[in-house]
Every structure is written in structure tokens, then in C-alpha cells.
Amino acid sequence: MIRVQNLVKTFGSFTAVNDVSFEVAEGEIFAFLGPNGAGKTTTIKMLTTLLQPTSGSISLDGLNPKTHHNQVRQRFGIVFQDPSLDGELTAWENMELHGVLYHVPSKIRRQRSEELLKLFELWERKDEQAKKFSGGMKRRLEIARGFLHTPRILFLDEPTLGLDPQSRNQLWSHVKRVNETEKVTVFLTTHYMDEADRVAHRIGVIDHGKLVAQGTPREIKDSTGTETLEDAFLKLTGDNIRDESASSTDQLRQFAKMWQKGGR
Image (cartoon, rainbow, N blue to C red):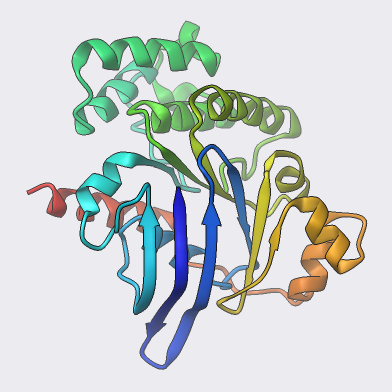
């Protein structure tokens, strides 16, 4: 579903992504892990058409994002770390707006919205403004919305940041259910190692722009001689504190601009 070969992205003399290659199978949950500034955000931007690679190739569902950007955008959904709901709109209206933007036919849009709001346990609150929702409810709504246009791939950037353990567990139960029933490929980033260990089929670890490990959580722990994924991650990337990466709000704004430009 996702194929990345010898991917490179440079900004002047700085190499943000350095000869990265990996594949993600259809229906797989793939966790892309790395410290701040490791190259995760830059890689995701290239996968989601926000940046053009300096060299190397990307294929999403058999399409090249560089030459088929509109078709590729129809095939994936994105949930960035920062909130992107319209708080003045109800849950139902947020779903409707998303469906209209993705040209989902009215009948299908409404049927799909009802199914997803029920699945994510938001149906009883569908007529309430999103700004009145708790953090966990807002997150569930954003992810339900991301599934609305039936994407082949869903990108989740730190989807559970700041949520309590109960909300995190509930959210992943819903995501895994859609992943299993609709065979949606999920590409996620997270700093919760226990979360990645529990939900991901396979993991890629990037550091200083290079992919330093990939495999199942068990394979990565075995290869590093560690008992937990957090210990394996620290062994692979060190324990130095890194600078924060670019704001995901900026990513969302950039994606919206690219979408509008490409749709003209």
C-alpha cells in the first residue's frame, strides 16, 4: 500500500531524510517512531503531498504522489496532532463538511456518518457543538471524520497526545475495528511506546534522517536485547532531549492550501 525507496529530502546543506526505504502492506498498522527532529514530519509531508522529495520514490496505492497528487489525496485521510475541528459546528456538521469537501455523495455521506459516529460512540452527541466535547471525544470525532471518505490509508500524527489511558484505549479499540473490518492501512506516529507496542503490526524507527530499525515490536526488542519497546527505542536513538519539530497546525494549513491548489 505504501512503498518508499531511497527517499531523500534536503533543505540547502541540511539533509532531513537520508536514503529511507520501507514498505507498508495493505491493512497493516505501521508505527513510525523517532525523536523530535528525526525526520518523521518531513517524511509524512512527502507521503501526503505537502513536500516533494529531493530524490527517491514514493508509491501510495500504486500511485506516485508527485504526478497523481489529487488521486493520492482522495485515497488517504489525515489526523494531525493539533485540533482541526470547527468548534462552532456540531459533530454531525463537521462530518457533513468533510464529506462535501471530499465529494462523497449525499446518501453515502449520511449513512457513513451515522455508522462512524455510532462506532466511535458519538451518535447521542451528534447535535452538540464540537467545542463542548472533551479532549477524548474531539479526538474520536476527528478520527471518525478521517474515515468518512473511505480512505485506503489513514495517517495519524500523535492521535492520543494528552489523553488519559482510558480514552487512549477506547480510541485504539475503535481504530483497530475499522482497520480490521475495512482493511484500512494505518500509518501512525506516537511517543507512547507502550501504545506502539500494543497496536502496531510493524514499526520503523528513524533518527537523524535515517531508518535505524524496522520490524515487528518483538523483532526490534530482540535485536536490541531489551525487554520493552521504550528501552529498545532509547538504545537505538539515545537519551538526549531533542528540539520540537514543526507545528502540525502548520502541516494542516499547508495541506489545505495544497488541496485547494490541486483541485483547481
